Length: 131
Image (cartoon, rainbow, N blue to C red; front, side):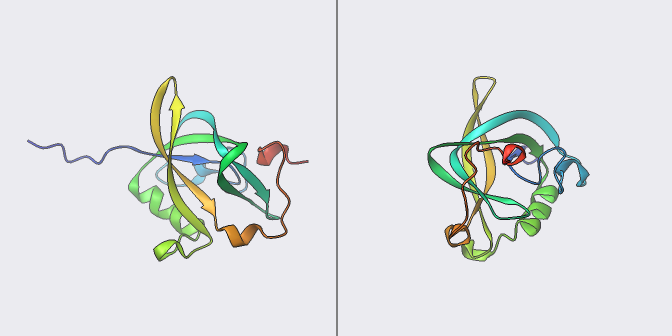
């Protein structure tokens, strides 16, 4: 009998979705399971009330990794304004992170490049330590 359960999905959050943030992911239903803290290659930008990350480069963006359901992923897509054909405010990407020494595929929401024009990078790579 084939396994009918979808493979677990994971998301890396780096801004207001982090624990204690204004959009704390734990407030969503079904509640996600926090797996670990982590960092990805990228640059974090201050967009005012929230950040945006551009992937790649020498910098590091700090965040948290959660196991999520497809229903929660759909809610995150709405919150992050992911549009068809990558036309929304954020683009949903997949990155590989090492968690406890093993690779783990994680979704991450990357800001559209035109949204960071004139915005300051956050040197620490940490939304909670942007001061």
